[in-house]
Length: 462
Picture 1 (cartoon, rainbow, N blue to C red):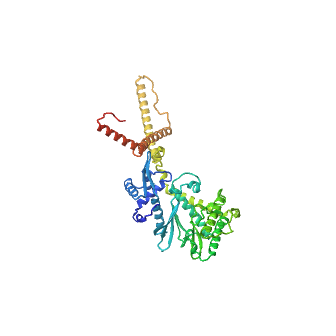
Picture 2: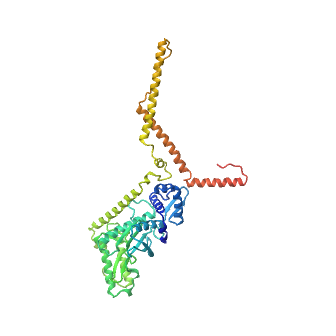
């Protein structure tokens, strides 16, 4: 379980937040983000960024990993928590965070508050735990099916849950009020009640309370299916909060909701109904004849399903637009240490104007030289003809290329020369200090050479 200690947030500098954001952006297409890429994205000096990376690593906000072929940094869940809480704090959504009030296989729940004294529930998604790693088969967060890291999946889960909560709350369904969402952190209303699993028979005011509560829960299941065309998928005593004063059920936990047109919709619907029936029979000894079936659902009402999908797509497009604005600088830097071509496109060639001026000067010098040679040749011919002595033949030395062809030829030569220089530089960077495998091999050869010298062995090591 990740312990949330937010005491470091008040001491974090702007450079540290910038570096952590750069690591987060680099993790979109890197498992380990190399240091040169972090420097390029953050736009900080390499000297100061080394100190920031060291401090963040010591505080376990980022992690440095060194493999056989690649080494770099990755963002931890603790660092991801700090980035989300920092944004929510700047928005003045929350000003403090308290104790942990809940923990599950996919998330942790904490108590938070704002400057006005209002209390919230802060849910932080943490996919990737050992008890729940079959996300790709149990959830449909990824529409394209590509593999990605757990942090990004947690972000998708939070966005999906926020989309469902906004739609259901606006339709006056009994759920907590959604407040705000950033990255994997979801802020919602804190309900004053207890879980249905903790509601004992003695806490019921009368014998009919179990019947009333049972009918409310079954009515909630049918309303989700008929009015919205969705199935909760995890409708059990651990995801239902009961208000003790009115015995009003409040539904929580929505990332796994599916449409009634899903291939496994009937399986999930029957499981939700069976969970409630079995719980009331075991806990309160109540058995009802009203057990809704999947056939009773009005499957023609699909407007709300389309609205949910449109809301999800809007959230996804909004996230992509913001990401494109953030990574505007990243497109001009190195995205992989193994790709020499991308390293070559990092620095542009000289401007077209400068090249034109240089080529024009060269052509003018050639033309002047040709004109001078021609004038000298004509003078010599006049002198020789006047003296009456002539030997040999005179040929023209004027160029057979047009100025435009010379200009294009010189431009290609200059471009080819710059390309060769940058290729050598890129290969040197890739095969030098940035390659963990070669660095380790060099260290092993140095150790072996020292051992041979210690035993007076003159054999060379290649």
